[in-house]
Image (cartoon, rainbow, N blue to C red; front, side, top):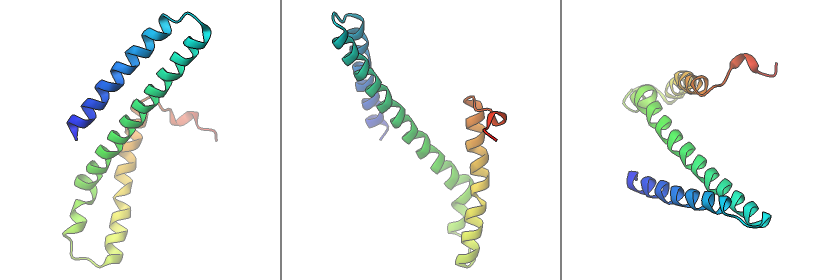
Length: 111
């Protein structure tokens, strides 16, 4: 899977470079607009792929740190569900820490 993602990133980088050069060398406004649109599409595909990879990593972090022990415990289904939901709290802290590191300020909320 890593090689597939690496290949996709290489193709996206080639297309981003191509659209950037097309935008710089555009002779008409329509060509420039089309190059900008192509670059935006390539960038959004890259952002979506990055989000998929980050969610995949967060899922494995949650499984190994928070929820992996639930498979081997001998509790009833009710208690497995309770403890499974309780493990979402540390996952929320991890996601919150990532959000704060990326520039989110909790004091700037709408309320």
